[in-house]
Image 1 (cartoon, helix red, strand yellow):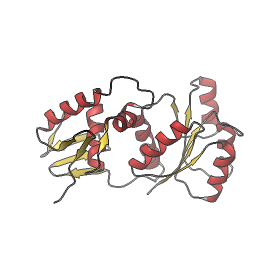
Image 2 (tube, rainbow, N blue to C red):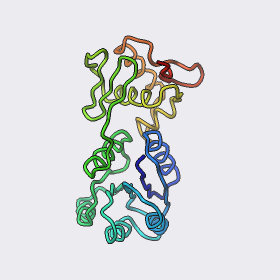
Image 3 (cartoon, helix red, strand yellow):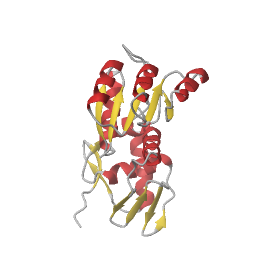
Image 4 (tube, one colour):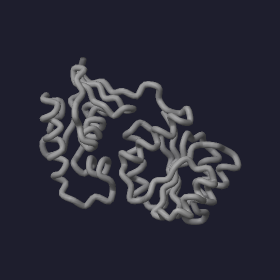
Length: 222
């Protein structure tokens, strides 16, 4: 299990990132300011640092510079500032990539996966198998009985979410936060619409409704 250090001072975003990454199979630790981040980094092994730029005590640039004095661990910087000068400064400190807030959680996870694979920290097997379904996370393809399914990005991410944790119930609120992002303020019934379309394309009752709670893939018993 890969270990990710989340450095973010906003509690709501901290919790969202921690929950999302742990659901994706990562181990996490969280720091709310630059000093705490450096203390954690010095006491534990991390495979990647998810680093906010605007931090109390020591900002993200300072944290990055001090980490780079002792380690080449992959660093993915989060920032609400998308100016070219700041991005170039970050790359000058040898960060691996930027994500600008507000960001898409699936895109963030994909960037993390690519960075870890590029650094030698990715998983060799990157497929999910469920009954007669195979989901390839590298090519983002889903095969049913060997036949490719034509899925939208959201449908693929929903399928990935359910098959990654068969039996686990996901509420609409959880799915919105995980796939649409913490800044989504639309109608939560958009989840129902996407699941209806996904069920139609599967043509099988693989996604169950848990009345009054949410949705799940039935736990595999084979």
